[in-house]
Each structure stands twice: as structure tokens, then as C-alpha cells.
Length: 226
Image 1 (tube, rainbow, N blue to C red):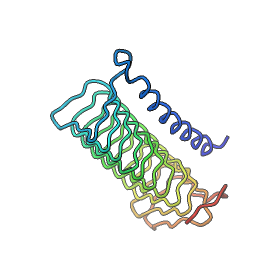
Image 2: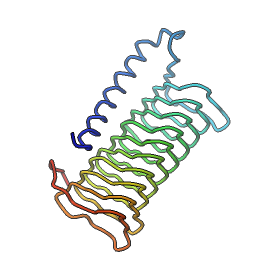
Image 3: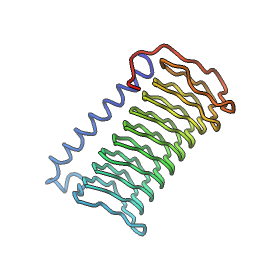
């Protein structure tokens, strides 16, 4: 199986697992002595001076985490603003914007209309979104599916996924291997490995873009609406 096919299957399993997981948590809600509490609220707020010392399971209309969650955050919400710290993983289902300006110690995983990372994610970013922008730091890999991906920060290992359009104008520590309708490598691009892209058209590459190893367009495996 090709790596991109495997990654797509991985994301489908992720979404299915997330939906089932929230449903199971809802069923188990009355058993408060057995599982962690699920917070159901209009606005979920962790102020700057608050520290939650356990995992948080949340269903809300909107959420803002300015303080610290010492554990994981599992949340279904309209929008999420994270300017504080989550020491574990963030797992989010949102029909709005997920904006991370703070710090996630583990991984960011989920589905949203828009995902913006201006802060730091210690491990992986795995998302399906209409728009994804990585302007901060991703400590390991980025896997993205959706309309557009912009990387003008740093991804310390690999970028994979399938997007209609992708702009890379930052640093990638290893390889880029994507299926894309339109690929642009901006003037600040530094890729310390390969750039392999499946597309019906050649990439737009700035003169100052740097790719350490091979840069190659491969045959497409499907069509994009561009």
C-alpha cells in the first residue's frame, strides 16, 4: 500500500473513532464513578490562572483555553481558541475555527472548518479541514486533508496529505509527499529532504526556494476540483 493511501485510511479511522468515542462517552456519562466527567456547556472557559490537573472531555458551543490542562483535551465544539497549555493531546471535532496560539505538548488531531497553528505542537498534526495553516512549530509530522494547506512556520519532520492547493513558505525538516491540485514553494521555503507531489500541473517555485534532495512531479491518482 502506498504511504498516502495508508495515511488516508489512518485519517478515516481517526474520524470514525472520534465520533464513536464521543458517543460512547455520552452513553457512559451517568457512570461518573467509572469514567471522567464530560463537561457540557455553552462556553467552555479555562482562564489564565487556572490549572486543570486531569483530562478534559467537553461538548460546547465555543471554547477558550487560556490556562493549563495537565492532560488531554477531547472536545466537540463550534470553535476552539487555545492560547494556554495542554500538556497532552488535543482531539477536536469542530464546525468552526480551531486556533492554537499556545502550546500542545502532544498531538493535535481532528476535523474542523479551519485549523490555524501559530503556537507549538510537540508531536503530530493530523487534521481534515477546509483551510489549514501551520505558522508555528510542529515537532514531528503534519498530515492534512482538505481544501488548502499553508505552511509558513516549521514542520520538523514530514508533510503528507491531499489538498486542492498547498503553499509551503517555511521550513520542513524531512520530506514533502502530497497529492495536490496546485503546489507553490515560496521564497522562504527550505525542505531538507524530497518534495514529491502528485498533480496535473507543475509547481510554482520561487527562485530562492531550497529543496535539499529531489523535486519531482508524479502521476496523479485522481482528479481535483480547482
